[in-house]
Image 1 (cartoon, chains in turn blue, purple, brown):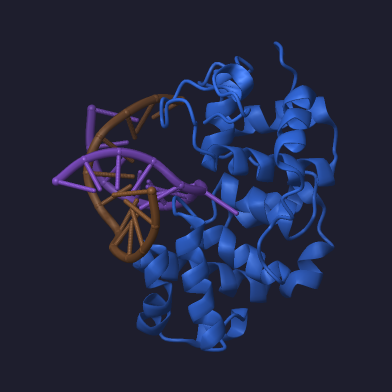
Image 2: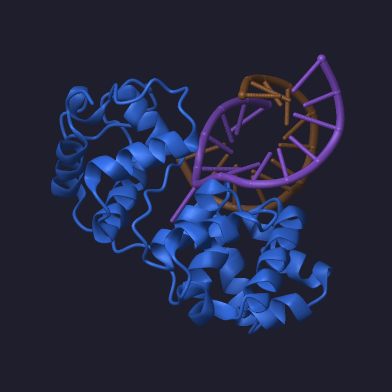
Length: 217
DNA sequence: ACCCAGGGTCATA
DNA sequence: TATGACCATGGG
């Protein structure tokens, strides 16, 4: 690992932005639904879809499984890819019920649970890890597009590493700290949304490298 | 009008 | 294994 270290980056982000209070969602199930709906999608759009589910009293695995596809698709419409996401959400809910729900799943160890989540069509590595970290509170480091971009720009990775290579490397360096992983990922996302005040969208800012307020993209 | 957004699957070489 | 097509809405 080159400088700055993972810990230094974390503290810089935390000192700049403070605690982020993630994941946005009232229950573990809502967190998991959000993880699927936010695939390659802005969170503001996901909020609308979840609000639709709530307003129709359908934020429930059994109800989602029992509801006609075209109805679910209409509620998911604002989150984009609504036909794909309807299939994925129904797949996930069917699996979730088969496995006995959250309490039953919570009894699995992290490695088993990760494999089980990945067996659901529509749940890939990042979605599974969002669920593991933010719904099941397991010490799993989420690698999303922002994380990869930031760590590559910082020189910590080449950019050709696999998802799991990056995840395991970072996990072994930081140690199995759920609360730290939670805040770190949230801070990376928060930071990515900040606009560079010097040259917006320049794409070259890395932490304090370019922007006076410590904002980089 | 264009670009991007808290990815994943499937078909093809 | 490694690309590419595809999915689709909403905000800047």
